[in-house]
Length: 301
Ligand code: NAD
Image (cartoon, rainbow, N blue to C red; front, side):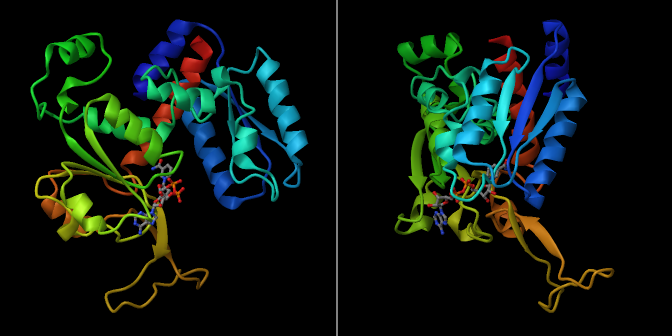
């Protein structure tokens, strides 16, 4: 994807710039910013970090976003999380012009998912769909003439037609937009969340299971149908334990070591699934590639 984006950028023949507005002093956010910068520069997108005070007011951040919206040098904008205490993140994200919305999260761009006409969309659901489409799939139900026509027009991937998909998590950034994308491809979609009774009953019916709950070990092998395709979106940091179950300490600092895991018990679920994405190294890097793709879409528009 990065190679093809680099070529696309060259064909565009002009500077493309992503502006990142950061109004926090958060260590995790700084890591994200560094990764975004690296990914942008790898393909030739200019990355500008616009740092604001971690105590900036809603009005100040909105004014900054409005200035960037009006600036023709700015191809796309990303607002880093978290925002200062007391600031409504959703409200100010909504101030980003839809045509400069690098994360595809403004109401206008989310709304276009309903009709399958989004130019830019949330990066993680896009990554999940891309990973699915990279698999050797066959339609589960033959297409009727109208669907054949839609598939021919590139409106959906016919190979996903008729699949049973279950999404665990119904957040605005992952679960909900992903459910719409799966529906666009004629999957039958079940969306689970904290209000779901008997989660295992729902997940076991899935031919495609996507977990984005943020709960380590939530999905165990007995919750997965044999041969299911499993995509693990979650990124959870947990303490590293030794064989005896004791915390492993960092040799230098003496502090407990941590590691990143997803929602799935990878060892047992991977025995049962036909495909599974690892954490880290699965959905995450593809998500980053889609951020770059969105920036390019904004620039082209
Ligand atoms: P969120 O906290 O906004 O939403 C979590 C969702 O999971 C909610 O719908 C909640 O109802 C559901 N949930 C929580 N516990 C549950 C349980 N026990 N049973 C059933 N449902 C449950 O989180 P989010 O922003 O959507 O992110 C979800 C996970 O994905 C997090 O681990 C996050 O770090 C990760 N994430 C990864 C990427 C990536 O690029 N790979 C991007 C975004 C988020």
